[in-house]
Length: 485
Image: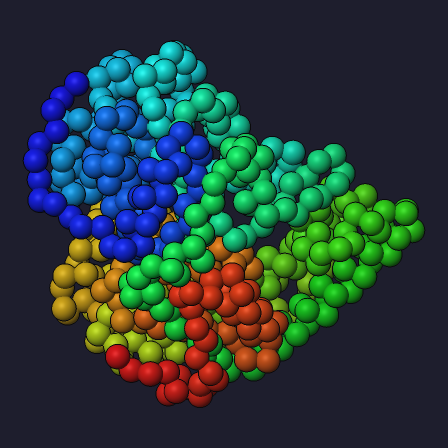
């Protein structure tokens, strides 16, 4: 195997040194490290494989090809001392070369899919390795589904690495997930599931780091909600809320009549998570899920794009589609709010769920004289777009869809605007941390269930991540109470 080149030395911070010393004392025992976004998981990984355990052979598992490329760049070029000692297992590595990488490289960075494929063909390739480092270990856990608690291929891969020293890392391990077993739904902590598959895990949690200098490096995220007034949207959402409540009552009545009410008792999420398996009429299932999706569209899409969603026999009993077409504005009130906020900051990141909204925000802001770049699932050179946003002072706004925002760090942003909110606390928290602290504004239509949902989200985020989040008090509806940079 290749020799390690010399490189500039980096000194661990106090909390990083604490973690590394704990690992030295726990060598051979599986460890789960909770370390919030921006606190240096890659640097600790480098310290493990290049400094503290430089005699060990290691596999580093990351969950995407883009994360793999960035990890190798950091380990080899930013921090150094690995050079040709490091190899990769990804879809871009030819199949015939993968076994060679496993045999010849002391440190191998791999995606789980490719690693599982290689080890399935030849399980002996893992024998010389001493440790397996799993980045973002929470992504192993299946958010909801059937009896499988892990996403593919982890249910197979954990067996292949069981006799190795596992060091798992995550920015957050405080969410729960749903597991369907037969007709029963269990909502459990993801930490419980991780310990089921990686027994006897020693946990190093964020609270353990309070005795160190970690608070000196936490960049707090300030959350606030800016409400958006649109009487048409509020009226539509009110009707949809009533239809959802009525449909839910019908579902509950059918369950009670059949003696199956226990299937959804105990947690309000059970109805949504179990809907496809509930012993009720298919028409009720389709109606309930369709109304939920329509309400999401109402809150997240340009108003004119909504009209076509109302063309079905059931909805036309409650909505005058022709009147909707006449009354709904072309430009979303949320887009107008984004413009009002973006002009006050040098660098703004905007997150929105649908490409139609990305395009409308881009159009409105550019007409107002702001230089805008966008990243969606169809963006070919995401790196070039991000560099322009980060480095070009004239490029003021970056607008992204959910696919485009994955695996990104944007500390250059002064403001993040979230146009619509989903219910998963972990996912929303990870969105907030893309800017590594600073101000995050969530937009919500006033007087609707969306506003209530945002405020519930704030409560959950504060409860689960108290070390790095705070909520700014109520601000004016025009956003004037939002502090400027």
